[in-house]
Length: 134
Image 1 (cartoon, rainbow, N blue to C red):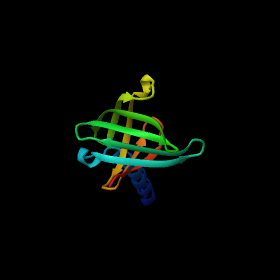
Image 2 (image 1 turned 90 degrees about the vertical axis):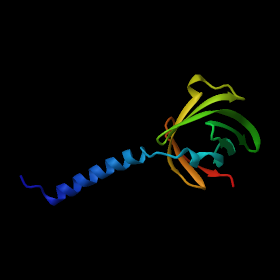
Image 3 (image 1 turned 180 degrees about the horizontal axis):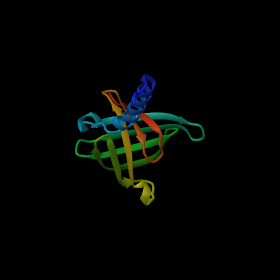
């Protein structure tokens, strides 16, 4: 049976597309690249300006805070673990009551550089980028 060049091209594109998603989600992140101080700002249509600041420590702990329109809204701390490119956050302290299902969260790290960390929340599916505090 002879295979047409068009069939080979389509098959190659399908395999490449499948690998692109799997390969991107199977990156191994160096823990040293994510430690440090990070921040993010966004404008929420109903709540206003939201600013998040947090620190990821080399001892696998983290802490942070969130303000809404410059008013403190949340302070938290906990532990983190990294497996490949998935980081799991376990909230140990919080000034607001967290439901049991909110006490742990896992994100997929898409990329990390000296300036930024981009991740996708597995729970919300939302992609976000943090900036490193200089």
